[in-house]
Length: 83
Image 1: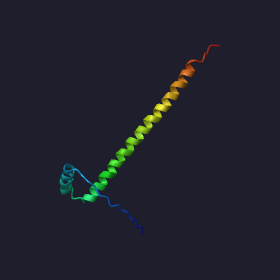
Image 2: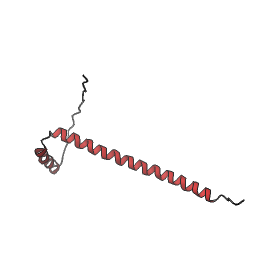
Image 3: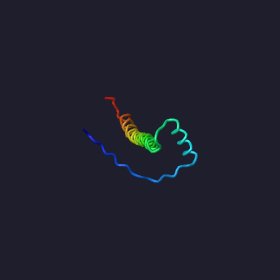
Image 4: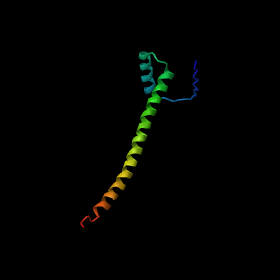
């Protein structure tokens, strides 16, 4: 048998009243513990943030490659192929 031990951290969190009220309404319908719901919400938000970070990185790297490619293209255009 394999046992997995999860280490949990305790935090203090201030939530806007409107958000808390919405959470409570949702939790009453889906019958999920508040702690589990908040953990899953943060996990989902982290995935979105990681994706956005990667997209920004790829755009920046694409821009660098584009500059190099345009420079190479200009160099090739300047080559005289006539013999």
